[in-house]
Length: 578
Image (cartoon, rainbow, N blue to C red; front, side):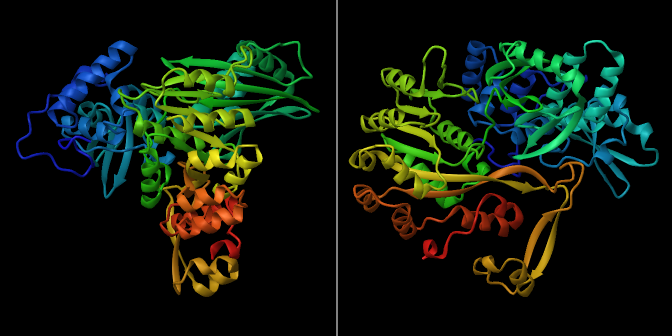
């Protein structure tokens, strides 16, 4: 980052900063021109950054804020702080500190939506309300809290709107009203389902047909939970509408079908990947929701330790070679790859990708979608990419020997190549690639780093509490984990369960990692067709830690729980620890 830029929310302003422009005195969201003036006046970005952002925004018909966020020149927290300073009020980060539902409901919905205001704190007789226009917030709610002091804070508009989910009725209640109206049943039910899925940040929507009804479930933070039920007699119309929107055959009921939908509402779009398969009780639908723009994750955001970040950064600095990220479906491999690419994506570098599907659009990156209809496979797309003069190549997944061979040869001929690969752990990835038919000397010449990962749920910050456990109690409950803890009394953290986390005790996810740099000794071992145990033996000498050990550190730091870690990773066998 440029030296004049604020890099932490706690950094104070300079002694004599340029006068900040006064905020607009209306309820409209701060204009882009006003945001630009504020960011420059408060020294959050340079004039050169703003110029680049304006040029990009004009060329790509987007906003300067989108460019600044996607280029990591600015974070959402710093943007919120900058705007809060311009209003002369504190910044309320609702994205990380969402008020409880009961607290939000203290302000009637019509008032909250009219003035875009949320009750963010109620403490010691003082009410704090957050709004994207704090100048009007206090007067808007003053009559609701007689006798109490009211202070205001600034919060980003999208975070305030996310808090309004507290006013939403249960999905089944809304289904009932739609069925009573007997009008556009299928379109309205689908719209309600999609809206809830986006609000709750679901990655997948499941339509599970049963004998008399269809169960709607959302996968949130990797775990499925029921969202509502629809009578079976209405499912055919819902199914047909999904098929029509996904350009699938409505007269086909006994074969699997795959399609895609672009869902747009209020100027925002999300791509939906649709899969339909026949079951004994009817056709089951699963819809994967794909974000249009990747969130501004950094290495630390996704859970990489400082040592692992350094190993990954060193490997990514090399002019050519291959970096693999392994793990099962839904383990966050794509997010890790994009976080890495964003750190390397510069105007002087040609970054190209072949993916199935393209999950995130990334500024300045040339992305290709696999298409079976046009025979654009990973292998064929990769052949074409190599002829496009790339510096960095992303292959969404190495699925077969042909793709693996082309990827290895691309890395060998002067390209830096990233890809994902299905393997249980990082040590197993090397024997698996050799079993696919990759020549050992080619793999040894190109492979630079292997990462394995899993996703664990984060303890909800709203209802997080500590629990003291003696060594004797811990030994009774988790005898196989005693070797990881040496204190007589230990403190762990859990989530009680609240409205913010839907009573789960968890909110959000982070990855646990296993990183193996491929050094000279390991390259020599690859030439001998090693087993995963032999690979891990050398990796251990280099200081590598297992997925479970990385997770234990996150448990000790109060990031997740032992139960959650055991759900996704098992303690390594004793011989692998030596």
